Image (cartoon, rainbow, N blue to C red; front, side, top):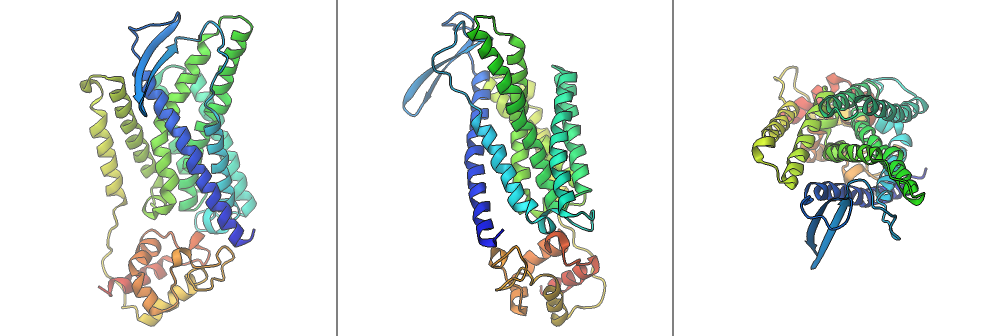
Length: 392
């Protein structure tokens, strides 16, 4: 694909992904908050579980939720599904444009596993599908046993993160953990929630009593999506933060993000429900502790100075060999027509100007060169680091 058209495809897909994702997350947060705010004492219609009075945008709203379903199907029924479907479709489109079309740069790292583009893409697609089937089976086996189910899903995502870090580049692995969770969330809507609701609609149309089990399963999967939202958002932006994606124990960072995000969501949910703080307050310090552990685990460490001094000419030679195919006024790398982020590294002045980003991206996190296509060695990174530290 032409680089210019590829960039526009990436931008438009990313924009669309943000728009529909905000819509999906917004409805998830709203309906969970609505469920927890229902007043079960006020009942206006037969079969109503609870009601809620709400005010927004200068208007007052009175909402009723039925225990199972109304006695007859209303003329106008609003479905909330396209936000979820389009979030997954645009996200997968981004995966294609960013990672599949440029697999050698973003997805494959020969130092992790030597793969062809076809093999990498095949593993990507297969793992997302297999992950959904395993998750779905876990939910069906454990049913309403909340704690064992939460632990099992947590371990499944950790297992996926271990797998991805042993197959893909750091950037590719972390984004795939996000895609793995996002696929579970979207398929919850597409395969379980909406089909169950359609069955209940069909039963209403036939004059039958709707089965409550479909509503219970849909509520459970919707709640799973709600708790997974905050972790998956952070994983999706992780490629912009190499200290996450390139961490040598990335699975541990994933675990800490899951704990932090899910427990923070739990606190917000219980606040919406009006629960006594003493019943759920423990989640806040645990979430904060997990976050502090993640910050500590990703903190950079300065190695002791060792080895001979590195001259300016040697430093420039290193970046010329490993960096300027992309970071030049006229890049020779097939994926770029201009230097990424307008960072050029063709002169000594450029190196000094961008010394700190080079230290972070190349020396500490080893996120650059992309996919280590130029096969930069650890010794060369250490040499570049010594030169940068000598500038202080």
